[in-house]
Length: 199
Image 1 (cartoon, rainbow, N blue to C red):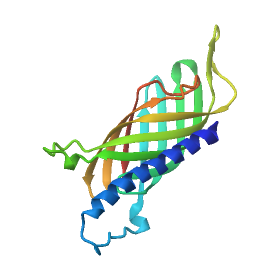
Image 2 (cartoon, helix red, strand yellow; image 1 turned 30 degrees about the vertical axis):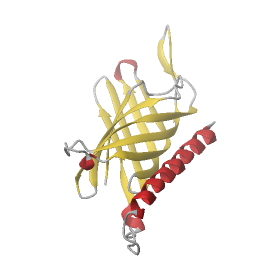
Image 3 (cartoon, rainbow, N blue to C red; image 1 turned 180 degrees about the vertical axis):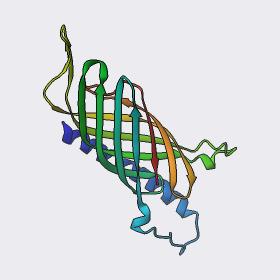
């Protein structure tokens, strides 16, 4: 099951790269012959970033999910990274950690700077990621809440959003994602709002 999902993400990345290549080819036909595209060094194609979640109070929630990505094309970025989530429920004296990893792909469908009025909304992006995480499922009975034995689950998150460059290589993004797997132990409820950054 997990291998099928990972294969699906990889197939999606290849499909988007092929689609982008067709667009690039038609654009390049109109350019002068002999003009070669400037090669971008490997180090400049690498991107770093991730998302961070913090909440304190009756429920303490800390999420750290860094990513390392690679710009396959100007529009397509693929990446991977670890996930760690710490949760503490003060009223029930419960604490748990969730950990795992994810693979992701983002494809820019419209560049904000190329819109007719250049309204400055950033780039419109399609986003997909598959998480494989280890967690303790939560159960409830007459005695209260408790955690079960650790299990591995995977969540396929699909959606889109906006990415806004703030200068140089630094950009912030906001995505609205849906957990299409809908595993009963998933830590998410739809829709999922994801804030992130890259540099």
